[in-house]
Length: 328
Image (cartoon, rainbow, N blue to C red; front, top):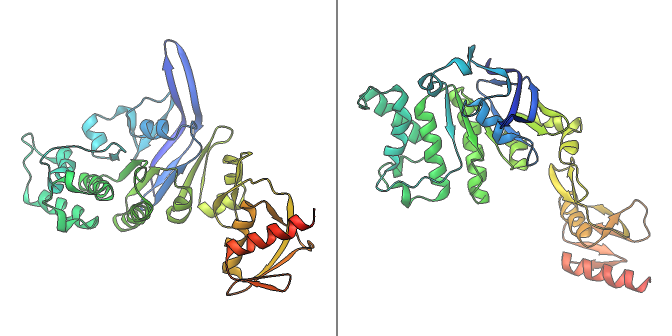
């Protein structure tokens, strides 16, 4: 079921009579129970679109509907009952515990005095448990790691209990293990709570693995959306991230650098070691061409080159360098 839709939405900025349109005529939808990752090159409007969809920025034209209600007609409290937003900014509040921060998510639901009822206390506890921070519930937030802080802000959004959660670069300042953990957490929460979760990210590889749906933004094509694999198969990723310096490699879902390659080799053999072998060869300037004179056999334990057994990549590159130097 679509919880959010847009109709011919145009986003951008209007200053001193001058209008800068970043994206136009967008017809998008968010479905309950899905994690949607919004990705694209810098300057294509990811943050602007996110701000527009949350009502923090006015659209240039068009409309956004949440649960059938037009966003621009809603009061601030009504918006807070429908959308919770997690920003990248680092939270610095002295003497505030995890419980204190998460409880702020209940503000749109609380009475004038901000009293927390037994039911709201239960919701806060459940939100903290969902992000696996029950053991640190009473700990000061300034004592937590960056990954734990991000989970606290996600718990706050869960406590707000809105059908939609939007996040701006939630993994921006995290190391790899925490980036993976946050993506898996958001995927799990979308499916478990039936909320629509939309996030902007530069983590292309993680988005391809974790997202139920991708919003792929580019200057030329606007916003293309669909299941990640479909956008790979139809060439959308290659087009969106086209560059002279790198290309999107559909074989492995990663970006590959366009190295200057002048030497030709042919490689065959063990599948797992093959991937890493090809990476090392490309970095060293070797292109793989079928039936090239120089043949490398990849085995389970190493490589064979000119009937010589080699045990490390470093030694392989060294032997190739000698071989091609002799051919000059």
